[in-house]
Length: 386
Image (cartoon, rainbow, N blue to C red):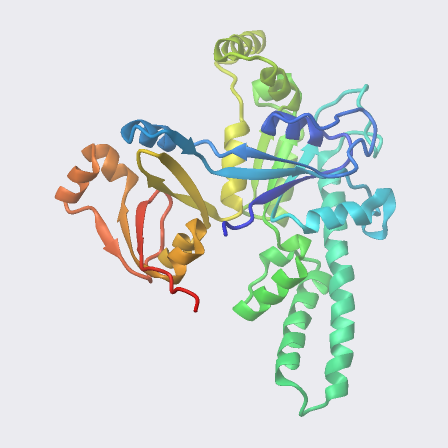
């Protein structure tokens, strides 16, 4: 089966989460000016943009093309005290625990008509509130596990179950990192057993995060806002390496109302002229690609006259497991993977030319599939049930 690939949109109420979700996914989630407008999580898929699939579609004269998708989930706003149940926080935090990555959205636009639950706009403070609520929820879970497993190991004594002792040592290390040192699980140095424990707990702070800053349309066009440098400094200090993407919900939603590319182009030109900037364009494709990459996802292609299709796998996946994404029998009865590079195919013009150039490769079980590989799998026949 393909790996899970869901990103949850997380933030305080009224920062633009549902508006962002609607613009990103072409959805119609409620987007009103009051806290907890969203209660139940909304889910939608968005296509991962990639010009390569269009090129392959034309080259193979395929009947259809199937792109990769990223699933986005609009999660209700959290408030201070959410880990203790404030603002229906327990339910909302369980929704975050169920996703694989986080779009952490904060607000940097001033608008007297849009209520801010903290009374004023301060995106750095808002980031700290949400981050602390997520960490404290992990602390609650880890504390329970640490105490219960610790008592169990103590009862077993020196000659007790070795596996249970090893599990407790893993939990103890994670507990010390998240609870005592107040750090995110995703930023720790873990061995394979510790990673298994972290995954089994679905720790929220273990999930990759992409930070999104919602600007006014004018600030987005000018690429200026008094908070951006402060937000970047907070991320660099607390979560170095994480990505910050400024965008404008107002602009993206305005753009989504137009049906033709020409209308969108004219709107962008009008906004650019009004703010005396060279150009303005949508940032949604960058956000989608960044979210997809943050989940450590990639895809390979299968191509033919029937269809060109993207198959999502995790980075580092070996050939048999990649074949299993298409069908479990392909993994169980894997023989080889015939692989060519997209760049070689486009440069040389046909599969025959790739083969003639010696760039069509037969690969075995230990081969790690790379992004954009074009693959034909060979598998034996499945054993018949008696």
